[in-house]
Length: 386
Image (cartoon, rainbow, N blue to C red; front, side):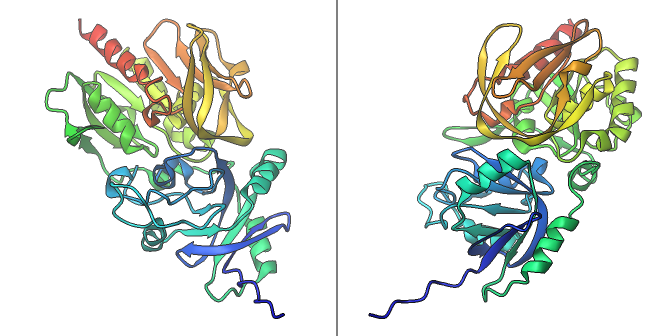
């Protein structure tokens, strides 16, 4: 009895150690190299692909149902996808969601991002956890023609994220104002018409929903590029300064960001709030150090303990570097800690309203466990005014 031949793979993922995973390609065709990470979130694949913090990375999704709710214009965290590609277990199916306006496959094709389906993501995730985030090459060719030696060589030649300043690649080109607030039923995104505070947000790769949370907390937000100087910041006479999330090695971005932050802290006593890379930038400015993690934290189910209240928050995380809590100087305390591995997740100054967290309170995994951080920022600015 004749048997039909297996379909020829149309995509492959080559790791720097020579391991190759085959699968079905979708999205754009071509080849890309990056660091490979895994994300454990069950929802939010569109937000993840458009999060600037994923610059230089390909994302393996551990949840198999990717593409099932399609995509829509409202859920982009920035204008275009920033993650280099995606790896999934099952090929995306037709979307079934009332908000969907496009299939994930078509969206990726139009946005120039490569994806591979049919991969044993459990095996791949175990390898990442055991060996660290590998450098990889991802290729998609509808004819299934791959030069494996060249792909492995490309993965080995990838420079990696250590020492890379990627904030300059994803930051805004010029300043702009933001007043859109968080999405709410039934009207969607409303706009802040009666702001109480003037906030300057430094864009190291800011997600739109962070800016929406600031607006919802009563802020009139002016966004400045990552390379803004302290004079640029203070020229707006802000009530507070926000330091955004972003990609790359914090020590590399810190070469220009840290002097700016220190100067702002020296010249004013206004509240400062940082998230993710902004947290790391603040820590560096205060005298601490950062370290590269083995495989980082990427997901929407990370328990974090508030060391001051004892409360445990379920948080969203995306970072491959962390603040070394052992290097925090006097006057700076650790406020939050990961319950997965004990790594630092928050700091604050003891004598000033200056604080930051490693996780993403705007991503609502709790879903509202961490919004108090934006309210705390607003309260601090209000206290300065009274």
